[in-house]
Length: 69
View (cartoon, rainbow, N blue to C red):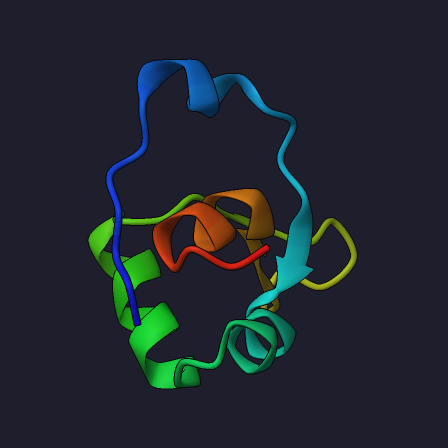
C-alpha cells in the first residue's frame, strides 16, 4: 500500500461516490479501516439520500491516496 499527499490542483476533480463496503473491496483495504478514516474526517464521505445508514466515499480521493488507477 502506497500513501500519498494530494496537491491543491487535484482536489478540484468531481467526486465519484461509492458505498463504503464496495470501495473497501475495490481498493483492497478493510471496511473497518475506511470506517475509521470517515469517522476521523480523513476522507470525504456522504450519506445516501435514500438510506441514511449507508455511507458513500469519494473513490477519486481514495485512488489518489492508495495510488490505484
